Image 1 (spheres, rainbow, N blue to C red):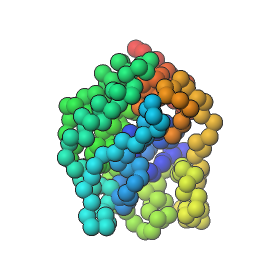
Image 2: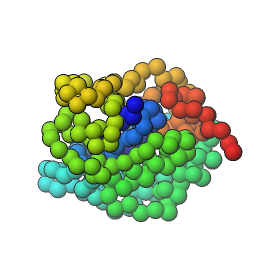
Image 3: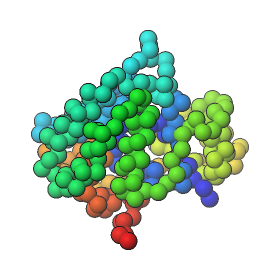
Length: 235
C-alpha cells in the first residue's frame, strides 16, 4: 500500500522531517501553500555556546506577504557565506565536522539560489542523499490542486495513487477525517516521540534543531538516532 506525506518545504529541517520522508513512499513538497513569516520555511535553529540560535534566509515579501512559498524570492546571496561561517564557527569542534562539511559546503559557497523553494529542495535532496534516503520527492505543482485544505490533500493522494496519507500531529486540529474515509484513503499520524539523545555540543540537549547538528556530531552514524533509517551498506 503506497503511503504519501505532504508537507511545506523547510530550510535545513530537523531530524523528524527526514524521518517522515524515510517513512513514506512519496514525499510531496506542498509549496503552493502561503508563505508564513517567522516560520520554518526560511529559517532554522542551531546549537551555539550561547544557546540555541536562529539562522534565517532573507526573503522578499509582497505587501502583507500574500504569496506562496514557491513565489517567495530570496533577497540577495550574501547570507550564504554568513550562514556557512556561522555553521563553521559553532560546529568545527564536532566529531564529524570535517567529513560532513566537505559534502555540504559547496551548497553554500558554489551555488546561487533565486527562490526559497529551490533552496529548500536542493538542501533536502542533499541531506537525503547523505543519509541514503531514496524516497521519491515531488512537488505539489506536479499535480492538480483542487478543493479546500483537506480535499486538496486527499486529491493529491488519489493523483499520486497513494492509499495511505501520513500526517504530522499538528494537523489534527483541522484535518477532516471523513474526506479521507470517503476517498478510501487511510489516515495515519506520524509520531515524533521517542528520539534518543546523541553526543551534542554546547549545553543542554535540544531535539528540535536542524538536522545539520546531528550530521556534524554523528556523521554516517546518524541513523542510530533516528527511527526510520537503516545503516548505509557500502558497495
